[in-house]
Length: 295
Image (cartoon, rainbow, N blue to C red; front, side, top):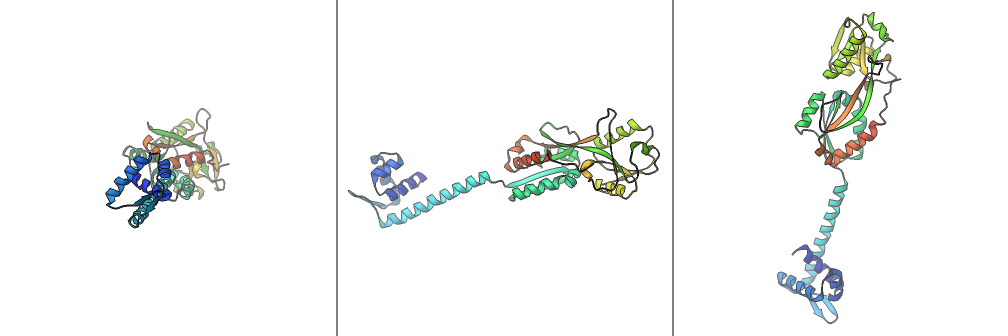
Protein backbone atom coordinates (compact mmCIF):
# COMPACT_ATOMS: atom_id res chain seq x y z
CA UNK A 1 0.00 0.00 0.00
CA UNK A 2 0.91 3.61 -0.50
CA UNK A 3 1.21 5.86 2.55
CA UNK A 4 -1.99 7.63 1.48
CA UNK A 5 -3.85 4.34 1.84
CA UNK A 6 -2.28 3.81 5.27
CA UNK A 7 -3.59 7.25 6.20
CA UNK A 8 -7.11 6.32 5.04
CA UNK A 9 -7.20 3.17 7.19
CA UNK A 10 -5.71 5.06 10.14
CA UNK A 11 -8.43 7.74 10.03
CA UNK A 12 -11.23 5.21 9.43
CA UNK A 13 -10.09 3.18 12.45
CA UNK A 14 -10.12 6.32 14.59
CA UNK A 15 -13.51 7.63 13.46
CA UNK A 16 -15.38 4.37 12.65
CA UNK A 17 -17.67 6.60 10.64
CA UNK A 18 -17.53 7.18 6.86
CA UNK A 19 -18.90 10.73 7.02
CA UNK A 20 -16.49 11.94 9.70
CA UNK A 21 -13.55 10.17 8.04
CA UNK A 22 -14.36 11.69 4.64
CA UNK A 23 -14.47 15.15 6.21
CA UNK A 24 -11.02 14.66 7.81
CA UNK A 25 -9.59 13.30 4.57
CA UNK A 26 -11.22 16.00 2.38
CA UNK A 27 -12.86 13.46 0.05
CA UNK A 28 -16.46 12.57 -0.69
CA UNK A 29 -18.06 9.57 1.00
CA UNK A 30 -18.53 7.66 -2.30
CA UNK A 31 -14.88 8.24 -3.23
CA UNK A 32 -13.74 7.12 0.22
CA UNK A 33 -15.98 4.00 0.03
CA UNK A 34 -14.46 3.13 -3.33
CA UNK A 35 -10.90 3.61 -2.05
CA UNK A 36 -11.64 1.40 0.96
CA UNK A 37 -13.00 -1.34 -1.30
CA UNK A 38 -9.82 -1.17 -3.41
CA UNK A 39 -7.65 -1.41 -0.29
CA UNK A 40 -9.62 -4.38 1.04
CA UNK A 41 -9.33 -6.12 -2.32
CA UNK A 42 -5.57 -5.65 -2.24
CA UNK A 43 -5.43 -7.33 1.19
CA UNK A 44 -7.91 -10.01 0.13
CA UNK A 45 -10.04 -9.58 3.23
CA UNK A 46 -12.60 -7.32 4.86
CA UNK A 47 -11.07 -4.74 7.14
CA UNK A 48 -14.29 -3.02 8.26
CA UNK A 49 -17.86 -4.19 8.59
CA UNK A 50 -20.37 -1.56 7.52
CA UNK A 51 -23.69 -0.93 9.28
CA UNK A 52 -26.14 1.91 9.85
CA UNK A 53 -24.35 2.67 13.14
CA UNK A 54 -20.99 3.01 11.38
CA UNK A 55 -17.93 0.83 10.96
CA UNK A 56 -16.58 -2.07 13.01
CA UNK A 57 -13.08 -3.47 12.65
CA UNK A 58 -12.84 -7.14 11.73
CA UNK A 59 -10.39 -9.55 13.36
CA UNK A 60 -8.20 -9.40 10.25
CA UNK A 61 -8.70 -5.65 10.21
CA UNK A 62 -7.31 -5.32 13.74
CA UNK A 63 -4.04 -6.86 12.62
CA UNK A 64 -3.93 -4.68 9.50
CA UNK A 65 -4.75 -1.53 11.48
CA UNK A 66 -2.02 -2.36 14.03
CA UNK A 67 0.44 -2.67 11.15
CA UNK A 68 -0.83 0.59 9.66
CA UNK A 69 -0.43 2.46 12.95
CA UNK A 70 3.09 1.10 13.40
CA UNK A 71 4.10 2.24 9.90
CA UNK A 72 2.64 5.71 10.43
CA UNK A 73 4.42 6.03 13.79
CA UNK A 74 7.69 4.94 12.18
CA UNK A 75 7.22 7.53 9.44
CA UNK A 76 6.53 10.28 11.97
CA UNK A 77 9.58 9.25 14.01
CA UNK A 78 11.74 9.22 10.88
CA UNK A 79 10.51 12.66 9.84
CA UNK A 80 11.36 13.98 13.31
CA UNK A 81 14.85 12.49 13.07
CA UNK A 82 15.37 13.98 9.61
CA UNK A 83 14.18 17.36 10.85
CA UNK A 84 16.56 17.04 13.79
CA UNK A 85 19.42 16.23 11.42
CA UNK A 86 18.67 19.39 9.48
CA UNK A 87 19.18 21.35 12.70
CA UNK A 88 22.14 19.41 14.07
CA UNK A 89 25.68 19.92 12.85
CA UNK A 90 27.75 16.84 12.12
CA UNK A 91 30.13 15.46 9.49
CA UNK A 92 33.83 16.24 9.06
CA UNK A 93 35.50 19.65 9.11
CA UNK A 94 38.76 19.61 7.15
CA UNK A 95 41.14 22.43 8.10
CA UNK A 96 44.64 23.42 7.04
CA UNK A 97 46.34 26.25 8.91
CA UNK A 98 49.70 27.98 8.96
CA UNK A 99 51.93 26.38 11.58
CA UNK A 100 52.07 29.52 13.71
CA UNK A 101 48.26 29.69 13.71
CA UNK A 102 48.01 26.05 14.72
CA UNK A 103 50.41 26.66 17.59
CA UNK A 104 49.21 29.95 19.07
CA UNK A 105 45.75 30.89 17.82
CA UNK A 106 43.72 27.88 16.70
CA UNK A 107 43.57 25.89 19.97
CA UNK A 108 41.23 28.28 21.77
CA UNK A 109 38.89 28.51 18.76
CA UNK A 110 38.96 24.78 18.13
CA UNK A 111 38.30 24.01 21.79
CA UNK A 112 35.10 26.05 21.68
CA UNK A 113 34.07 24.55 18.33
CA UNK A 114 34.39 20.90 19.41
CA UNK A 115 32.54 21.76 22.63
CA UNK A 116 29.64 23.30 20.71
CA UNK A 117 29.56 20.64 17.97
CA UNK A 118 30.71 17.33 19.48
CA UNK A 119 29.33 15.31 16.55
CA UNK A 120 31.72 16.94 14.08
CA UNK A 121 35.01 15.20 13.31
CA UNK A 122 37.93 17.59 12.76
CA UNK A 123 40.78 16.87 10.36
CA UNK A 124 43.71 19.27 10.73
CA UNK A 125 46.83 19.90 8.62
CA UNK A 126 49.51 22.48 9.43
CA UNK A 127 52.08 23.80 6.99
CA UNK A 128 53.16 26.62 4.67
CA UNK A 129 50.56 28.97 3.23
CA UNK A 130 51.45 27.86 -0.30
CA UNK A 131 50.74 24.25 0.67
CA UNK A 132 47.41 25.23 2.18
CA UNK A 133 46.33 26.98 -1.02
CA UNK A 134 47.31 23.87 -2.99
CA UNK A 135 45.17 21.74 -0.67
CA UNK A 136 42.23 24.04 -1.38
CA UNK A 137 42.70 23.86 -5.14
CA UNK A 138 42.83 20.07 -4.89
CA UNK A 139 39.64 20.09 -2.79
CA UNK A 140 41.36 18.28 0.09
CA UNK A 141 40.22 20.76 2.75
CA UNK A 142 37.24 22.99 3.47
CA UNK A 143 39.01 25.96 5.06
CA UNK A 144 42.54 27.30 5.04
CA UNK A 145 43.95 29.87 7.46
CA UNK A 146 47.06 31.52 6.06
CA UNK A 147 49.48 34.33 6.84
CA UNK A 148 50.41 37.26 4.65
CA UNK A 149 48.19 38.36 1.77
CA UNK A 150 47.42 35.25 -0.29
CA UNK A 151 46.58 35.33 -3.97
CA UNK A 152 43.22 33.64 -3.74
CA UNK A 153 40.15 34.27 -5.88
CA UNK A 154 37.68 32.31 -3.75
CA UNK A 155 36.14 33.29 -0.42
CA UNK A 156 38.59 35.35 1.65
CA UNK A 157 38.00 36.76 5.14
CA UNK A 158 40.50 38.89 7.05
CA UNK A 159 40.75 37.61 10.62
CA UNK A 160 43.30 39.86 12.32
CA UNK A 161 46.65 41.61 12.06
CA UNK A 162 49.43 41.26 14.60
CA UNK A 163 52.45 43.54 15.00
CA UNK A 164 56.10 42.55 14.67
CA UNK A 165 58.50 43.06 17.56
CA UNK A 166 62.23 42.98 18.09
CA UNK A 167 62.76 40.85 21.20
CA UNK A 168 65.90 40.42 23.30
CA UNK A 169 66.91 40.11 26.95
CA UNK A 170 69.37 43.03 26.69
CA UNK A 171 68.58 45.12 23.60
CA UNK A 172 65.81 47.62 24.22
CA UNK A 173 66.05 49.83 21.11
CA UNK A 174 66.50 49.40 17.37
CA UNK A 175 69.68 51.51 17.40
CA UNK A 176 71.48 48.97 19.61
CA UNK A 177 71.38 46.41 16.78
CA UNK A 178 74.22 48.28 15.04
CA UNK A 179 76.66 47.62 17.87
CA UNK A 180 75.61 44.25 19.24
CA UNK A 181 77.61 41.08 18.68
CA UNK A 182 74.61 38.91 19.41
CA UNK A 183 73.31 36.74 16.56
CA UNK A 184 70.03 37.43 14.79
CA UNK A 185 67.92 34.30 15.42
CA UNK A 186 65.49 33.63 12.61
CA UNK A 187 62.90 30.92 12.06
CA UNK A 188 62.01 29.38 8.73
CA UNK A 189 58.89 31.03 7.43
CA UNK A 190 56.89 31.92 4.36
CA UNK A 191 58.92 33.80 1.74
CA UNK A 192 56.85 37.01 2.07
CA UNK A 193 57.55 37.20 5.80
CA UNK A 194 61.27 36.77 5.20
CA UNK A 195 61.11 39.44 2.49
CA UNK A 196 59.33 41.88 4.81
CA UNK A 197 62.05 41.45 7.43
CA UNK A 198 64.83 41.87 4.86
CA UNK A 199 63.27 45.07 3.53
CA UNK A 200 62.85 46.44 7.04
CA UNK A 201 66.51 45.69 7.84
CA UNK A 202 67.75 47.35 4.65
CA UNK A 203 65.65 50.44 5.37
CA UNK A 204 67.38 50.85 8.75
CA UNK A 205 70.91 49.51 8.27
CA UNK A 206 73.53 49.53 5.55
CA UNK A 207 75.09 46.20 6.47
CA UNK A 208 73.55 42.78 7.18
CA UNK A 209 73.49 41.28 10.70
CA UNK A 210 76.92 40.23 11.96
CA UNK A 211 75.73 36.73 12.86
CA UNK A 212 72.61 34.72 12.19
CA UNK A 213 71.12 31.50 13.52
CA UNK A 214 68.28 29.87 11.60
CA UNK A 215 65.93 27.43 13.33
CA UNK A 216 62.95 25.43 12.08
CA UNK A 217 60.25 26.53 14.51
CA UNK A 218 59.13 29.91 15.80
CA UNK A 219 58.86 28.60 19.37
CA UNK A 220 62.49 27.45 19.22
CA UNK A 221 63.43 30.93 18.05
CA UNK A 222 61.50 32.49 20.93
CA UNK A 223 63.04 30.21 23.55
CA UNK A 224 66.55 30.96 22.34
CA UNK A 225 65.82 34.69 22.60
CA UNK A 226 64.37 34.20 26.09
CA UNK A 227 67.59 32.47 27.13
CA UNK A 228 69.65 35.42 25.94
CA UNK A 229 71.34 33.60 23.04
CA UNK A 230 70.41 36.27 20.53
CA UNK A 231 67.73 38.66 19.35
CA UNK A 232 64.74 37.84 17.16
CA UNK A 233 61.85 39.46 15.32
CA UNK A 234 58.57 37.82 16.29
CA UNK A 235 54.89 38.47 15.62
CA UNK A 236 52.81 39.45 18.63
CA UNK A 237 50.65 36.34 18.23
CA UNK A 238 53.58 34.40 19.72
CA UNK A 239 54.25 36.80 22.61
CA UNK A 240 52.92 37.24 26.12
CA UNK A 241 53.28 40.17 28.48
CA UNK A 242 55.00 37.82 30.93
CA UNK A 243 57.82 36.96 28.49
CA UNK A 244 61.08 38.00 30.16
CA UNK A 245 62.62 40.04 27.36
CA UNK A 246 62.33 43.50 25.85
CA UNK A 247 59.71 43.92 23.11
CA UNK A 248 60.38 46.74 20.68
CA UNK A 249 57.73 47.38 17.99
CA UNK A 250 58.92 47.64 14.40
CA UNK A 251 57.95 50.47 12.05
CA UNK A 252 58.34 50.69 8.28
CA UNK A 253 59.84 53.59 6.35
CA UNK A 254 56.49 55.43 6.45
CA UNK A 255 56.35 55.25 10.23
CA UNK A 256 53.63 52.60 10.24
CA UNK A 257 53.61 49.56 12.46
CA UNK A 258 54.97 46.42 10.80
CA UNK A 259 52.15 43.90 10.83
CA UNK A 260 51.36 40.41 9.65
CA UNK A 261 47.85 39.60 8.38
CA UNK A 262 45.93 36.38 8.90
CA UNK A 263 43.26 35.31 6.40
CA UNK A 264 40.66 32.58 6.24
CA UNK A 265 40.15 31.27 2.72
CA UNK A 266 37.81 28.68 1.21
CA UNK A 267 35.86 27.64 -1.84
CA UNK A 268 32.36 29.13 -1.93
CA UNK A 269 30.82 25.65 -2.22
CA UNK A 270 32.36 24.58 1.11
CA UNK A 271 30.46 27.29 2.96
CA UNK A 272 27.20 25.49 2.14
CA UNK A 273 28.21 22.71 4.55
CA UNK A 274 26.75 23.32 8.01
CA UNK A 275 29.89 22.27 9.88
CA UNK A 276 31.96 24.71 7.79
CA UNK A 277 29.43 27.52 8.14
CA UNK A 278 29.45 27.03 11.93
CA UNK A 279 33.25 27.21 12.09
CA UNK A 280 33.40 30.35 9.96
CA UNK A 281 30.77 32.04 12.15
CA UNK A 282 32.59 31.10 15.35
CA UNK A 283 35.98 32.27 14.06
CA UNK A 284 34.51 35.54 12.79
CA UNK A 285 33.03 36.23 16.20
CA UNK A 286 36.26 35.40 18.01
CA UNK A 287 38.70 37.12 15.67
CA UNK A 288 37.31 40.53 16.56
CA UNK A 289 37.99 39.81 20.21
CA UNK A 290 41.42 38.30 19.66
CA UNK A 291 43.65 40.00 22.18
CA UNK A 292 47.41 40.23 21.65
CA UNK A 293 48.99 40.12 25.06
CA UNK A 294 51.89 42.47 24.39
CA UNK A 295 52.33 45.70 26.30
